[in-house]
Each structure stands twice: as C-alpha cells, then as structure tokens.
Amino acid sequence: MTKTHRRRSSRFSYLPKDHPTLLSRALYVTQIFHFGDFKCATLLHEGVKKCLPRVFNQTYRDRLAKFETRHARSKGLGMFARCGIPAGSIILVEHPLLIMPRTSSATVSDISCLLSEVHPKERTEFMNLANSQPLEDPLKAIMQTNRLLIDLPVDDPELAAHHAVFLKISRCNHSCSPNAHWKWDSASFTLTLEAVRDIGPSEEITIQYIDSSVDRQQRLDRLRSWYNFDCLCPSCTLPRKSIIHSDFAREELSHLTELMVSFEAWCASEELSDDYMIRMHQRALELREAEGLQLFESRKHIDAIAMCYGALGDVAMFRYWTKKARSLRAPSYVGGCVVLDQWMMDPRRFPVWGWRNSRRGDVL
Ligand SMILES: C[S@@+](CC[C@H](N)C(=O)[O-])C[C@H]1O[C@@H](n2cnc3c(N)ncnc32)[C@H](O)[C@@H]1O
Image 1 (tube, helix red, strand yellow):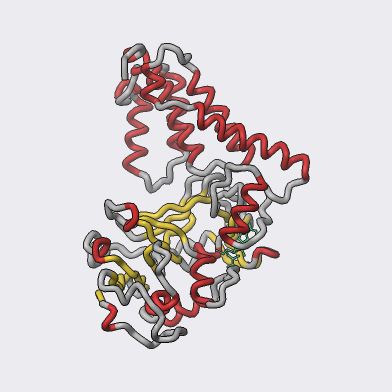
Image 2 (image 1 turned 180 degrees about the vertical axis):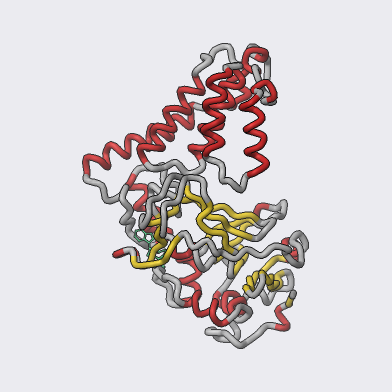
C-alpha cells in the first residue's frame, strides 16, 4: 500500500498540525509492507521506492526463543541467552517496524504518521522502548535511542542511508567487547543477529553501537555524545591497570590494520616475506580474542590466512585454516560450506591456488 501526504492519517499524532514534515514534500511517500500479520511502515523517497518490490514473498517469525528480555542492572532491560549459543549461530531474525530516511529533516510528525500505520500492539511496544535522549518529544527520543543505520538498495549513497527501528533487537545493550553482531539484508527486509563467539546460558547478549577498536576514553566520549549514556560494559569497568593493557592492545590492532596490504599486492611482492600477511592476521586474531572483539573481523582474518596458505600452495595449512573458516559459518550458509568442503578435499580447486608462487614479481 502506498500513500502520499494528502492521505495522511491523523489517528496518532502528538504534534501541532503545522509542523513541517518530509511527507509534505512530494518526493516522499509512505509504504506499508506486510509480513504475515506484522506491518512495517516506511517513509521512502520516490527514487528508493522504485527500487523495492511491492511485496516480499517470505515472512520471518522468530520462534527460536534463544533469548529472553530481562533487567540488566543499571542498563535497563537487556537480552539474555536462554541456552548456550555457539559462535556463528543465528540468535534472531526480525523485520523492522519503522524505516525512515537518514536525512536530518525527518521530523516527529513523520514518525507519528508512520506509527499510525502499524498495529496498536506494536505501536505500544515502540512507545515502551528505552528513551535515553534529553529531547522534549518522546517519539524523537525513542527513535534516536533505538534506531539502527541500514542501507536500502539504491545506487545513490545519500538516498540509500536509512534509520530503522526493530522491536526485539532494541533491547540489546552495547558492549565494547560484544558477543553478537547484526546484519541487514534488504532483499528479505530482515535483520539477523548472530553470535560472534560462544555465548553461555544466561549470559547477556550484546552488540556494539560504535566502533569499539579505539581506547576506552574515546569510546566513552562517543557513547556519551552520540547515545547519551556512560558505558557500563565489562571492558569499560575493568580495573585501571587492565584498562591500560586493553588500550595498548586496541591501539596495536589499529596499527596492524594500517600495515596490512591487499592480498593481490602481497602475492606480487618480492619485498614482503611469505609469512608477512599470515603473521599480521594471526596477531590481529590474538588481539581480537583477548579483547573480545571477534565480530566478523575474526572470520575475515581466518579467511585471509587460509587464502595466503592457498596462494603459497601449502596443502596441510590451507586445509587447517579452511576448516576453521568453515566452522565459523552459520549452518544456513549451505552453498558456501559446500564450496569450502570441495576446496578442503581438493585444494587445487581453490581459485587462487599457488598464486604467490606464480605471480611474485608481477607489476600490478
Ligand atoms: C537500544 S537501548 C538498549 C535496551 C535498553 N537497555 C532497554 O532497557 O530497552 C539503548 C539504551 O540502553 C542503555 N545501555 C545500552 N548499553 C549500555 C551500556 N553498555 N552501559 C550503560 N547503558 C547501556 C542506554 O540507556 C542506552 O541508551
């Protein structure tokens, strides 16, 4: 269902009627997507709307019940594992309730209009979400506290960037050593939350709201100025001596990232040693594990090490690291796992097998 501003609903509005809205500009329309009995209300630029299907075929209903929502001390509510969740498993798949352009001109009236389109139960759930912003209007404050940044599939990056609010993941607190990571898929209009390391029964499930690879002071400053809270995660509440150690480790991690070169450049380089990239990625893995910063980057380091051994034509080490890479893939990643299995059986089928040996000295 697509609506223009002329057909705006006034069933749910907190605002003076003359408040300027994006909807009052002809280029923006509201569109409601139905996922079974769940409604997702979106405010879309015409250019974005054209790129989206009118309906999505699949509906995801989360019946996995791998987590529960309960009090997380001074952090308010939080998500907690009901059972052990192995690294790489899916914790939650969820459709958004609201989607709005990231542009700063989206207003309280725009939020109010979208909320008038969703089911009353979900509207109430939205109104009960956390609000930690010192803003006068609760709608804007709730939106700012809980929104995630997603991209919709359009070429123009300005138009692609949107804010979305999801009811379940909104209860997930931040940690500077998070044990879960979310990703957005615009083809299915879903967010998937995955464990990045093993999560124990009753352990709190956390994500990162900011890039946590910087030192503690920078993290605290960013969380305070962007999200208006003082971080109480395990990494920020360590004793002083351990914080100094952790700050050094995160600084080394950033430095390593700067020293890394592309796979192609390493294959062609005569100056860099055979184990240059492997040592870098192994050290980065060690630091990530010590700091609880596995995220998807750990998987990237493991993939990169497997690729390096493949490029060196080292059968045993290639198999060892490819097996590790495979163990971190979600079981749902069927196609990818089949390919990894084929490479382990016959490493010569790996597309860049022996590349470094044959390309060393190539001019890129
Ligand atoms: C998206 S909500 C997360 C769920 C929220 N705790 C609730 O009760 O619904 C974000 C808010 O939770 C709190 N929060 C999240 N992570 C925190 C942390 N590491 N330390 C302190 N407060 C945190 C802050 O108040 C923040 O604005």
